[in-house]
Image (tube, rainbow, N blue to C red; front, side, top):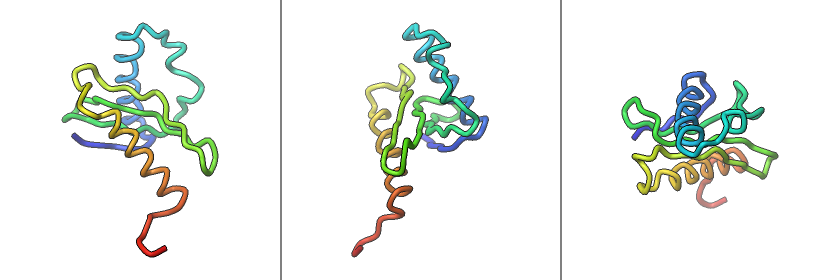
Length: 108
């Protein structure tokens, strides 16, 4: 399983593909509701891939210096019950801690 974080067009396309599969096709959410004003070219995503297939994703945004808002988290139906959603949130939490307090070190 490979993990990628960022706002590149390729990564956003992978996240959008997975969100469309899970939310629109599987859960019957309107595309107009699923894809919103927060889906900007600058928006960052964390995406897990199995080979070339995106299998889990979460959209990431900082509301302020101390508040992180992960949303649009989804996992492909064939990859559920493997802890990928928890791993997504753990990765985002670690990233947020690094951004707010810097890299943790012992003795400080």
